[in-house]
Amino acid sequence: MKYFPCALELIRDSHIEPISKENPNKRTEILHRFAGVTRGNDLFFVQIKENKNNGQKYLISIFPVDQWK
Image 1 (tube, rainbow, N blue to C red):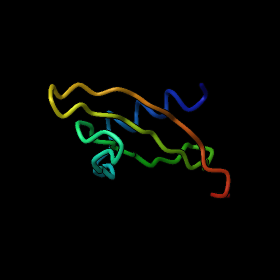
Image 2 (cartoon, rainbow, N blue to C red):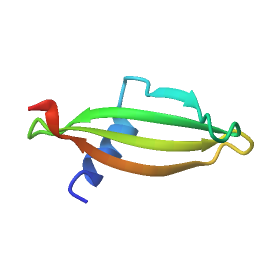
Image 3 (cartoon, rainbow, N blue to C red):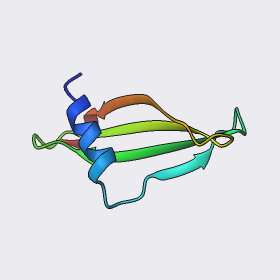
């Protein structure tokens, strides 16, 4: 939960486009991945799933990357 506020800020204010690709397991979805760094220099990713049919987006996960430091 400590990354949740950072994730919201990243999604809302990022000037860098996420890495996006079609879900290979479900062709009706696009997967978006944002990368961010906290003030404590922790690298983390935010993944969002988008339904191609209706444009709805769902937060899938927020997770840190331990090897960054």
